[in-house]
Image 1 (spheres, rainbow, N blue to C red):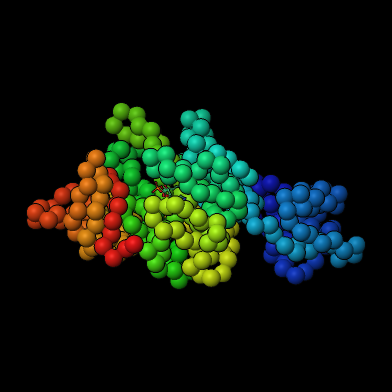
Image 2: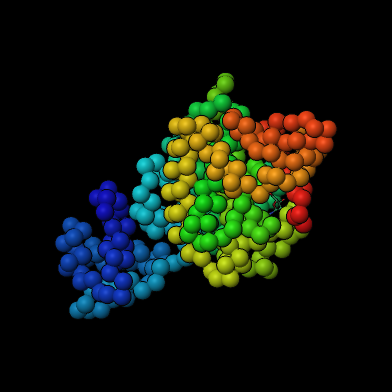
Length: 332
Ligand code: BT5
């Protein structure tokens, strides 16, 4: 346990390490190098945050329930990351985590800063489209990345985030998640998550990039009422059981750090094959809206630099960097 963590985080970790058991006050006080009154003070702090902790005059303290909130003390100690989420901001409610992160970035917040909210009142997708963000149901997260890169390469970071999420959904939840280029996550043809990338550039390189990630986790069908551009779903609807958001967030941030680092060190080539394998559109006929025109053709794969290769009806291969897939053969 890191000594630099706030005392009530350390206390929580000790209680969590003893499920179903009481931890004696004097032992806790000794371990945390505080007084028994100090232990009591920190127990009260945890209770105020929503943890249920039982007290027994002789036996001590027992953690009974944890709140379903993405609180820093529940996330940060579990991360085991080098930079991702080390600076972690948790908000009960915000207009948009991306707007909040943009403000932090302007103030010089560090690489890997994570902003998470339980609810967004003006969550947004691309082109100012709204993103439905009901309280405590989803994960609404923004990640600040300060690696300088050519602006054309920056959107690929969003694809890397999509890849990391798809891998987590496969490995830990057995969900058949795929990526609708460039970075929508679909499960059984329905959208379960979306990513919004926003950047600021200094001359020829990005100054910072913010990845806004919205994941529908525990939404019920009545909480995902459209009209939506694409049919929507949640992970709970697909698994027919609720998921622990805390665990999913930890798994995602860890996986993202690993994949992003591979991308930064090895370029698109380091993740290209995995992105092709996770793609919902490769080999299919798609319509892509780009630059005010619609292009239809067969999605062939990615170039070594990360652009999409599209074989159009006239037999020509088009290279597309940015666009919106509006139709996929076989989808709704
Ligand atoms: C996206 O945009 O898919 C990117 C969504 C990013 C949301 C995150 S949440 C944290 C961070 N803070 C923010 O303010 N935003 C980011 P796009 O491809 O433009 O899709 C938006 C469209 O999806 C909307 O116009 C609706 O049709 C539909 N939609 C809205 N809410 C949805 C939801 N919860 N699930 C599925 N589809 C939704």
